[in-house]
Length: 400
Image (cartoon, rainbow, N blue to C red):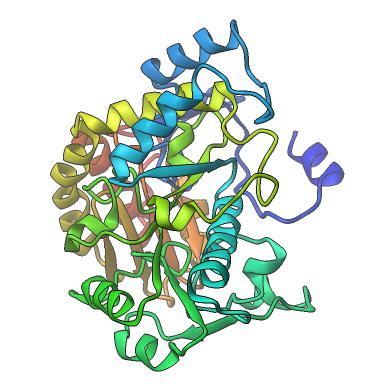
């Protein structure tokens, strides 16, 4: 199966050599019947676990009714989804799309249109951060500082000013009379789960308000319960002008994304200026509304908060770990490079029944579904300790 996939698909990914056939909760099973604890959760797309029964029930029910109408017509699921998500975000309205990158592109277009229409700016610029990851479309990679994402894909889209992440002063220096927005991740995921200094998001919020520019928070990975709050911005009681959402919004079933903002921002978009055939389709709305309702209970946010200490205290106690960053159930773990690369650590974890993802050298990311149990996290930490110490314990020993 791996050989077929590698011979017939572009090599834009370098997957671990595991072929998953089924999944439930925080666990997946490969084609040979081996079980693995999923500590990636589809880059936070599976916050509510594989096969969440409430989400699946909503999807199954909608599949029997209608799945797609296009936005040329209204459908009976769209209004409730839009209202529910807007309320969750504390905003007036949403604009639905499909993938996270589409939502970021939408936010960029809205910010530019807002600059044209509201501020009279004809050549708008947007301030963005070093080491960002917002997707891989042509416009987005134009302001990436990752050589793999950026190099060789020019000519590049102008209109972006790149500054140091975590420095409000750098943002202040970059804003000029043509700036329409500041776009950032409250926690930078792909860069290694980088958490900015305390107070940074508040400073950015105050700066954007003072200078009359939009604060756009890309909460595609960090939002919807992952960090122990509904949004990572909530940790500093910050409300951006625009949320960019995706991944977990589709419940691990369908791609669903959206931007959420007030009417004075999203109201600048008129018919024909932006859209998506599948954006806001009935199936996506049924799933998305269910996700919103799950988050309204606060249960998943609470689980991430309660299990945070289990994950982080355990990681910080491990030999060979040089740094740990993150919040909730989302951790970036730096491993002593003399022990192994991040890829090697993930391969050895896979052999012991844990699936994780490396990024940049000897850093790995851990983000299990929010339905994971404390004893499962402890078991995964034991497997990581065995990998880092070279233990020869059998991979299956003690597996929950």
